[in-house]
Length: 211
View 1 (cartoon, one colour):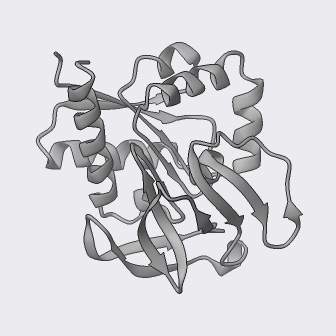
View 2 (spheres, rainbow, N blue to C red; view 1 turned 90 degrees about the vertical axis):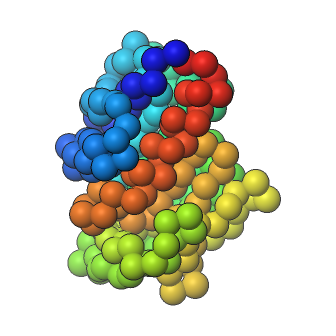
């Protein structure tokens, strides 16, 4: 078994380079062999050990996933394999089962349905309402700087979903088996603990599946 991890960041739009840097630093800090690359084609998706779906604009990202030949099918295949996936902000929306916008209501957009959660988009306001706050995150600890940019929140979660963090009474980080979702942007915080938590999931999954 090769113990080197190959982590992909879905490169359709959003914070791709920031996630590559954060995950690369996290690998180094953990003394874990591995490489972080951008992925956008089906054959690339099928080769990785873990996938990050970054922040951006979820409606646009969903459209791009749908129209790129074979991309949606490949993502669904790795979901069936229970490949570890982390979605941040818009990435969490894409992973959800249900989503609506606080201002305009229901929007037609691609949702992968991998996380048993209902999302409220723009839950803390629009772009000018962006802010930072210290968070307590289960499995990580206190004083994690959450950077919220047009951030969603989780308004309901199924019984298999573990709530990792709340802010102002709203759920802002969750985990369901090998899938993590955050309302905030951990890749912008300068704190790699969320990426380390995700890498631990990847290493366990790879070992369990004799990859």
